[in-house]
Length: 257
Image 1 (cartoon, rainbow, N blue to C red):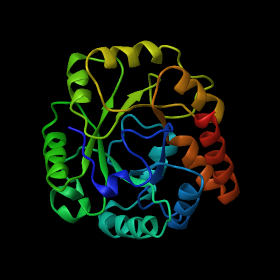
Image 2: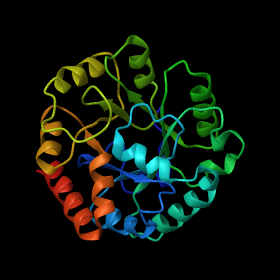
Image 3: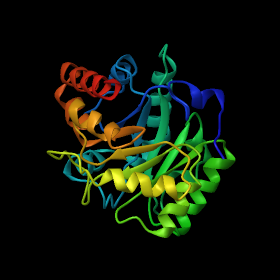
Image 4: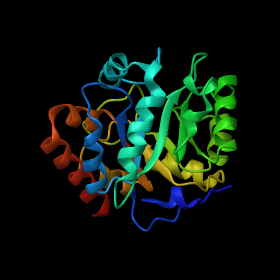
């Protein structure tokens, strides 16, 4: 089922005419100010992936792990409110997707207000993880669309989860943890075809390692509907507004050809 609320369709949709650009923004990292979201909106980011800190971000490399270590998750609701308010000021508001791991102390388990104003959710956890299933059900009850993270190697369970995605599928583009790579793995083409042939209808976005416009174009040439960029965007945000603007502009141009 594809959810099509008005809020979801701001900035992007499952039938968008251009490739999707999803970019990471850390929740609560004191070194990354919220006003940088103005640049995300101004440079054509479709979805802001809001990274919520986790005690065990096992698939993230040193950039994201370091950012999560700096964040205080006890202030998650306050920090998310500030992010929502900033996004709502934008003439072209990107969608807001919460990227999170599943753990027993997850703030949404005790405070359903965490879902307020979010458009999407993506949880990194095994498909049968009870907390993942609980959080996804709670999100859907609040009309927050669920995306699926499809890790490598792709299993039958991961395929079924991808088929059930409301929003998009984030397909791991390279083995290992997050972080920039020199090239985009050409094997992504076959993996995308596998998902499509299995009946996955949601947009498929490649993530892990993509860090510039040339690689963004390579992902589209492999058959992806868009990309997810995390570590490189975080590095740029830490370097400042000019560096972040330059990177996002390069990614958007690469996607649009």
